[in-house]
Image (cartoon, rainbow, N blue to C red; front, side, top):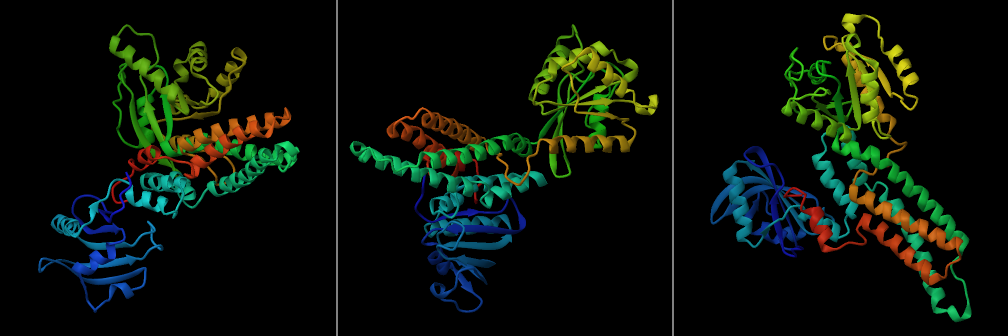
Length: 466
């Protein structure tokens, strides 16, 4: 999958635009531009400094293609660590096609998805977790997602993990040395110091694993299921939250027979709202499918907005519904609808009754709304934002990558095994097995331990030109 030649790709979006930009990377990139670019003032390319920009004409077969800006970045001081040339041209589709044809005729090869960042990784300009963060940064759609990706791209937690891994590697070397002197019964590795390092690693990894709950919802968007009986006002609430007529509203029960989804960003966090079919027993086969899908969506949701009309509420129905859906990682927000008609919020007494009849029930928030009252909808949005922030960890370190999460889980298991081995006074050769496993899993995060299949899977998901 690794191409050693010079590659080219358009780094800007498809179609016509005011400006487009091409990126060329490889040992021959500067030699190629010198064959077809005539700067406004005479230039000797080999003498030009890195990180300089030049205005001139791009020519091919005696004809001018465009007036362009050419930026040069000399190895190793470039994104890929190779000689890199970037050409900013006018965004005509014809000009773009001509530039691509020109450099392919000069020997450049079209870049594959993620090939520039792959070269940056292979040339040690960034580790693998930073490379993955580049892709996350490109597709980030909210402030929180952008901040998590940016922090990881800057090094995030991998520098600390690498430091602790190096310490563990030093112990592994000492234990290996002990095996060479096994007949002399000499101990080079201080078991007490090793145990302290394992405690530090275990604490750090647990903290990172705990952060994944928050990082995952930030990266994918927080799924919020709007649940309740038919005619509770779920579709009206979705429309009010989105401030548009997204779902059909009707007085006829069972209007919503399938799930309707849309996204909204609140204070930098993206929420995915899901309007579900009303929960009830029904003989209508289509509606029954909708109810089943509603239950599936709640099972996948991070937050459930349980919407009810206090004038049409049976306490046993609410208890049954909440007990069916309640799980440890589900945030339940009770939403009392139509407060414009009932005046005072009645949910407080309802909560009290719920606690009496279901001792294991607890609610995360209570809010009264009217879909005609923008202030109450704003209050509900504020509650949603607070609920997500409640699961946020302290500090900037957040794991949002499922591959990292799996590697950290495996590393933690190995570290626990090492600690048990120390307690049981296992021999150095048996300890070294678990130590090497821990080193392997920690190395997978930064890419110190990798293979072509893994790299191919990661970088194939990148856009072309990055």
